[in-house]
Amino acid sequence: MRNEPLIFFHLKLVAKISLGVGTVAVLSLLISLLLISGPTDETYSAIIRSNSMTNDNLGKVMLTIGLMLVAIAGVITWLITLYSSFRIVGPLYRFTQNLKLAGTSDFSRLIELRKGDALRDQSANIMMAVSSLRDHYATVEQVAEEALAAFEQGDATAYTDAVARLKALDDQVRL
Image (cartoon, rainbow, N blue to C red; front, side):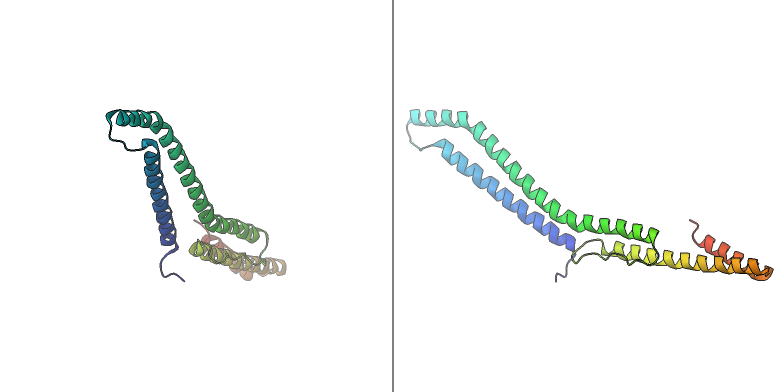
């Protein structure tokens, strides 16, 4: 288990991949320059011919290598994003499902996060909010039943107390 936050793991991973892509870029450009320049003769005509050949091919080679590096960097970035997004998108999906469950049923068990998912603090907050909301609704139902029973029995004092408790419960949820 790591003692550092998960974001540092991702930053280190991105740094390693960036360093790798940079190294591949430098090596590929050096190799292409060596291949383009040809043999190193010391005669004036060989130098001019080599320079002319380098000028003719350098743009094409650099464009090809540049496009290759952009493609490699794009694929690697996409893979990092895909890996990281599953750790974020999964919890967001579970949050949505938990809120749907909380809205439709008071007794259904909420969905837990997977091991390794991010947003653990937010998940705990949502679980706590749903739990307190369920408790609040249960209390409102109980007090409403007491008010109905008092009304049906004609007990004005019990009915007034129940209505006052309902108003107090309603004031708790006002924003």
